[in-house]
Length: 182
Image (tube, rainbow, N blue to C red; front, side):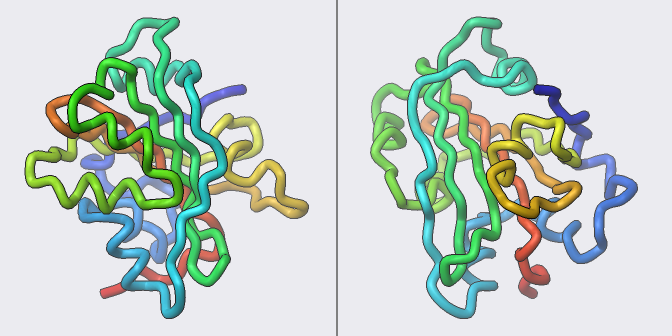
């Protein structure tokens, strides 16, 4: 599988990003909090997969890991009233799961954002944006199983520092995401 071309978010709105989607891509606050604010009904997290695996090449590079490094990989969908709005893939290097950070292995269907943004020591690092299509691994994970998947999707990735250790969060915005809440 190919990977998309990631672009630094500070470079502004990439060509082709729908204007209604760009506020979601560029927001530096808690995505969980924004989704809850936008959801008129019940917000939920659906755990799709969690386990030890090999990160994608660009994930290894973003985290500064060696080529064969292992990480805990967690994939979820963030839903409003049962409709998926965001696919998220979190990559946590084994070395980042020490001390209090071990609790990240037990999230289940709880949102990661609630844990990250509740800790005042959490730091948001670099953010990058990308467009995905059928050739890309994250696209396949997000919607490759759908009967009528969209032609392309947009997403972002953020390097966080939690409990002094790095973790990478990829967020792919799905077609039913509403207009960004004000």
